Length: 284
Image 1: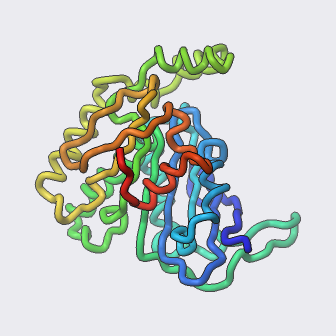
Image 2 (image 1 turned 60 degrees about the vertical axis):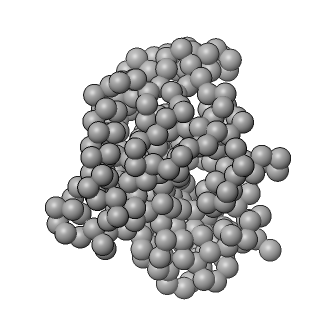
C-alpha cells in the first residue's frame, strides 16, 4: 500500500514546495526539508522521497520539500520567506496543500481530514542549515520581545542539519566538485554573482553574527527556545564546507561516512540520514 502521495504547490513568495502527505490516519508531524547552495527540492531529497514510505515511523509525518533561489538571494531573505511558509502550513495547513491537479480544470484530494500538527522538524542541508538557523534566530528574537515564545512553533522545532554551511564554504571545494562533473563553466559564474555564497565565506560577517547572536540568546533562554539546539551530522569526506564544529548551544555532532552531497541521500545500504532525522541513535 502506498503510504504517502506527492503534490506540488506554491504558498509563499520566493518558495516552491512538494509535499508528500501521509495516507495513514493520525498525522501529527510536519517535517520541512531545505536544500543547500545550488540544490533542488527534488534532486537533493529524492532518496528521502523514495524511502519515506518504507519506515513506519514516518506514517504519521507529512514531508514538505522546499525549493528556493539559493544562489540568487541573501540568506536573510530566504529565511524570512521560510518563516512565512512554516507559519502558513503549521500547525494547520490549508486544504489546498493536499490538492493535486489532474487537468487544467480539475483536482483530486490526497486526503480529506482536517490536519493539525503537534510536532515540527526542520531539516537542512548545507546552505539550508544556515537558512534554518537564521529563521529560528529571528523568530526567537521576535517571540522573546512579544512574550509569545511558549506558543511560537518555530521556537520549539527540532533542528536536524546535514553538513551545514555554518562555518564557511570553500571555493576550492566547489571547483573540485564542478570539475568532477564538468560543470565549472556553469558553477563559476554563479559563485561570482551569488550574494549567499559571499555570505557563506569562512569568518564572514553574516556567519559570525549568526553564531554570536544565536549562542547569546540561547545562553539566556535555552529552556524557553528548544530550537536553538541543532543535531548536526558532518560528512567525513567533505570538501565543500568547513565541518567538525558546533555552536555552544548544540549537542555533540556526529560524522557520517559520506561526501558533502551524499550525506543527505539515504539508500538501502546507507539508511543513516533517515535514522538521523528520526532521532535514532547512530554509533559513530
